[in-house]
Image 1 (cartoon, rainbow, N blue to C red):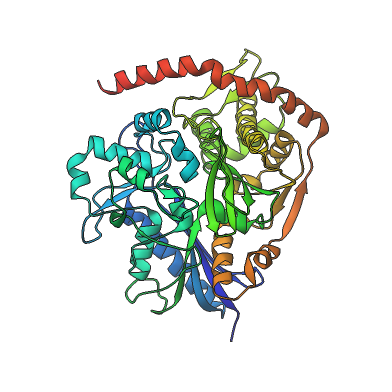
Image 2 (image 1 turned 90 degrees about the vertical axis):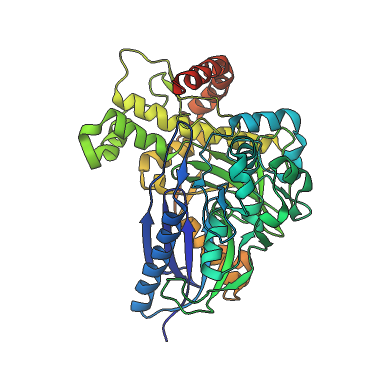
Length: 502
């Protein structure tokens, strides 16, 4: 009999990844299936729900098949999903809409209204009042698509769709639910006041289950796995990224940069920032995640490659990173606000836009790229500062994500944060987190602390003292730019609204 493995399935913004891990953290099979983001209108960012589910099933099926070919025995599945998505479903469970993702901005007016009239919601739900929040999205549907809202039998997200397909239960774990703006964090149930504001009833939402809830795979799920196999409900991708990095002890922060980015810290009880700059989401009853997500991470580098170097094709990213590495820290007094997708933490506003400040004739393409990457890392430094201001102590930072393949970006992050950054082996921290949580629920490892011990740190990047001092000096100016440009951002938003209707 081969090794017993659990498949960690991570269904994110642009792809579904499945990796089979054993109880020692070794990989036995992996698969990745992508899907396209849909942008039918300016500010709308959606996914085809059928494409997402089928990609998730394909990834699970392929990773499981590879593990079995290697002689492993699959004993369970753990699930991580992107948070904040919304889809309307009919009485039979068929989608009436696309999945409205975290990046969708159509509910900007609803979010601003809630920030103005119901600021107490953040204290109860831990979710910033921002267009990403399902609360704001549901309020938008009630106002703009009332006929659709009346036809909708159920509202869900990625987790509900997957659990319904795999297990036959329309359920959502408390972790994903804690990112909706509809959950009373301390009571662990849907918040009555938030439901009224969203225009939905609790019975229209998923059955609330713990992240460690053990469900069973149903026949006909098209995974190639046997009916009855344990499926652990799992959690949101952000909290599970912390677990996948072993960042579950107080004071250890997890930083990730993929399409977007985040800096998150594990605490033992729900805590809420009185100034509303950071979120609080659940993992398990004695582990909560506080932190901030930024909207612009690897997407900024992709935009630069497409915009500044389309002639380089598939090699554009590597070439641009080489050019940026030749530019000194501070990009010769060039600064970029990397808000191509507006921004979340700590501003939580749809108004910000990307902006280069200090541009001169002497700046090259390499300067433009380095300034953008510095901007992403400076934004994460603002999130770290917000956590400290909210009373959280950070003793250590661990990082993961596709950016970690770049030595330049690793160094920039350490320099911008002004502290050593520890990088875990591999780049699939969230899949590993999903598998670890499932292993803990199934009794294969003794609790999350033991699971965290399986995380292997392969590299520690120390900050360059001179670069760190420079970024520390520039951070207040970087932070002030958003406020200084806010009137311009509002003017541009009004202009875009008028011209996009023509």
